[in-house]
Amino acid sequence: MALSSSTQSALSWVIVGRGAIGLLAAARLQQAGYTATLWLKQPDAVQLKFTDLKQQSQHRILRPQPTDTAIQRVLVPVKAYDVLNAVAQLVPFLANDAQLVISHNGIIPIEPLLALLRPAQGLWFLSTSQAAYKPAAHHVVHTGEGKSYITKLTASDSDDNQTIAAMSAALGPVNVVSDIYPMRWLKLAVNAAINPLTAIENCQNGQLAQPQYRAQISALTTEVCQVAAALGYPMDPANTLQTVYQVISATSDNFSSMQQDIQAGRQTEIVAICGYICQQAAQLQLAVPANQQMLNQILAKTTTS
Ligand code: PAF
Image (cartoon, rainbow, N blue to C red):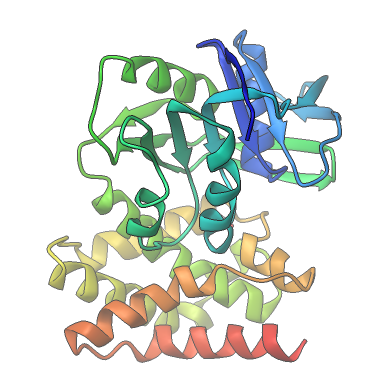
């Protein structure tokens, strides 16, 4: 791949895809004075309508990233099952010291990603509770103020503050943590409890507050806590269940990402959520029947529809 010697400036970010979190990040980066370009399968300019938390809307133009300029900084907020493929496609276009920030629901193995990168390239993981949805293809609405946790998975260097500052503008406030796995297991518990059930019931998150779901949500959450604890990430089941119900209440009007995926006939993140829990549990010889049932039911929906 012949890239020109020019690379992006420190204030330029490439956002992969046009998912809600990516478009939210792109709009907020632009607002903060960064240049945000999109990396899309079809490289068109996007005229984005961005509605912020105060329900004020503005229009922003997001241009496609040129393919002859080495990419210095890139946010990859794609679905768990697309991350490896997205990074593999980016690799020929990356600067030798490019910084990549990945962000997705669920947990996937990190080693295949690291194997794609050169020694000076940096890999980060960002976990966010910012809430956004797309009422239309090019309209993103910031629906809930969350926060983000970020960690660098590769060796740190002096340039790290620029990545942290940009991610604070995009999806902040950002907490920098040395081990992000406690946060990821907590988010995994939330996603395991909410996403498949809302997809199966075809309902908004808020419906799960009804008493008939209590036993199932409690079982799903307790199983995640058992697996996490066995892996060295102790999680209190009562506190975790409380967090799950807080998210159900805070996002009561939202349709979960898995409910939307099932309704649109798309692949879901179930393998990186309940599938990951089941796979880790099998290695630990722990039984996780509630998560196994969700995995089976969602897989059956996606393979038969
Ligand atoms: O995947 C999602 O939809 C979200 O992570 C969450 C927190 C379940 C809210 O809908």
